[in-house]
Image (tube, rainbow, N blue to C red):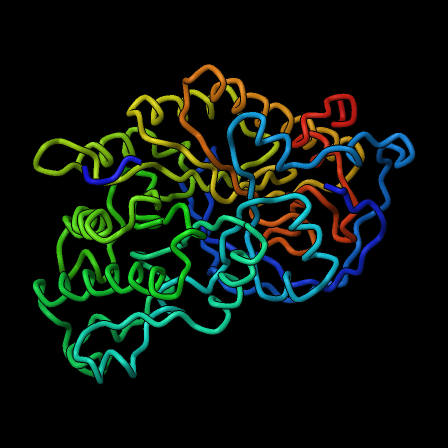
Length: 405
């Protein structure tokens, strides 16, 4: 293998902020999958019911930030990012105060980074970062914020035209060899853009493949697999390993990881070169969880994947009140339970990292305010829709006395 690699805002802030969205989830007691397209969330002006929170006058969180708490365990802590967040001074400052890692919500997905016009002109699949991507990369560079790249090879938000002759969806599909060539061009072009535009020191990890497996152990069928074959996954990591700089770790990223443990174990062990060295550096757990989930079982599954020696990252963490398709009300009792869950989850991760049981260098929350969440009806994040701190924030900060216990 060639690579080895707050001041806290407690006052009432304005709502009506854009936020992050994501993919899929499944009920732990059901095999039914609920699909939600990854797209920009609409603005919200809703406010949460008033709930009791620790008195601000005695708030120790004013003296500590998330990034300080995580740094004590050798970890970065992040949020998803949109241009709207950094264009608004209040949310921009909160991100700078609390986080030292970000992941773009949409602007580095294939439909945002591939140019049909230039691909036709060049005769090969061509990467061109758009204005929003450059704005966020510049912001990250200027503020010393690290970034996760998300994502390269994915069944969704990938333009149809890349699979067809002449880069035109009206034409026939290309053959296996041409599609492999286009995959290589896309991956090579992405990392070349990163270097040419001066962002090599900003991006520290990249999701090479996103959501390729189903809960029943079968591979998700899509144009990549239909044209290339099941080994498209191996080739994706082979090309990424070939072209990515040493400073960028390569990840496989998936949702409902707690139901795919054996599948993921079997899969990552196929991603090796001719010498048996891994072609990837880590596995990303999206971690879209519920307060009804079993943390004991979650940790067992996490440790099983970590036993490979690969890094683990929680890449899109949120913890919903209630359970799948049954949102819990943001009552005092439920919000306290959420705070306890966040405390126990992060405390358990820290314990395993400190003992060397899990190699984890970053955790990313999929946003920070309920009103900006793709699952806002479940109240899943650290701040309410008015960006007031919840028990969840104190849990994440490991302030047990304030986390709802």
